[in-house]
Image 1: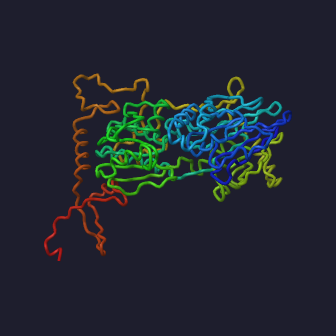
Image 2: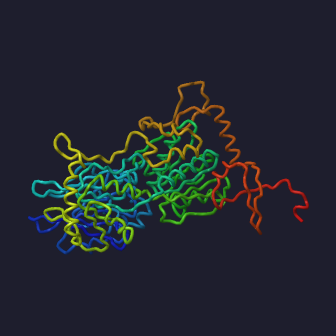
Image 3: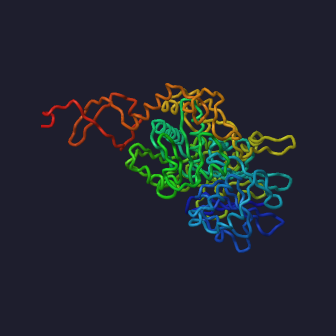
Length: 552
């Protein structure tokens, strides 16, 4: 057996690649394409006598499948998790997909959901493994046989160790002789996610009409987190998911009594309410449900727009309503990437989704053969045994092979039958906000609850979804909250006070600390107020205590 790889779009994002398995007894190689991003042209990659055997689709972010329709040929199946398959199929029903994806019917017919090992051809099989990053996302383990031995390739796809709306992060105890490692990193996910969630909770509980915009899957993740937080006694955030977010929420079978799903609406006013949150896609209000709803609130001083983007689109910065934006690139930091490689102990690490200096920064980091190539040449990684790049010295080669052979025995788990144990891409039944990437201490401080309450958020049984009823006939309907907890009179009065402050404003004393030309700097006596203000926000200021001479 000989195994080669080839970058499928080296001049673009480089998230896509083609793996060829050359079997000694068969002339034609088995060709597997992993993801189909911008710039991929399978006809240019395959020789005249080669066929596309299968496509592995890691997740339903558009940049990973935007050329899928034009690259399907030879009746190749598209393997994906059931969640990713469902997310893409629901998108194919939209006008936006029809405008931006070729061959939607071909895609729909080619997608085959898998949860366990699937035979691609004799001696080669694949299965999804958890990868965090997004609901239902996965990497893929590819197993092939050479003689009596099984060898394993791991294509990570975009990954995190964090959970993603209940779905587990990438495991570190599976066999992986060769890893196609997504090198995209981000060091501020916890900060950005915590700030976004805290801002939404604060503004909603202050009585604002809040619109949060995000991609479809990120919108589902936001709804999952905020609904979980709403089960805390002191927090009430009624949520409506609309449009694409609602379709995904329903198709992925999420349920929570704090969340109302409205896939279609006629008028924006139907799904926007004071003191409630509406989540819509896309991530900036330039089109779709986001644009329609933003048009309703953009001149409403009591409304709030919170944009959660991945940095690919320019957010709205100013409007008649309060505006905030957060950039959330859900990738691991470099320390996490290093830890994953250290745990897996592969012979080969092939860097994907990075180029230039960002790809070269991995050089000499691991006790593995590192491939950070930037062209579309074919490179051999296995030829009867795992092999490193031709430019590696013999001394380095001996060191790596010795290190990996001694470490490999401890990196995997065997079942009673002797098979390798692989985790499933399956949503956790418990809720763990910290594992999702939230800084609970900072969040608790921002929304004024005890950290322990956020740590002990309990799961909600989806079989009990529906309207919440109380067994106490003497409990007034006004005391019911979305999470089923009862609200005290003091809590009601406190909430009414916050609503009044949001509508009429708050009175605070300020000291003039500097006046330069047209600029006046004020120091507000209430330091806590600063946490609720954002740069560029417009405030109505009432000035008192002046006499006529002050104007002369």
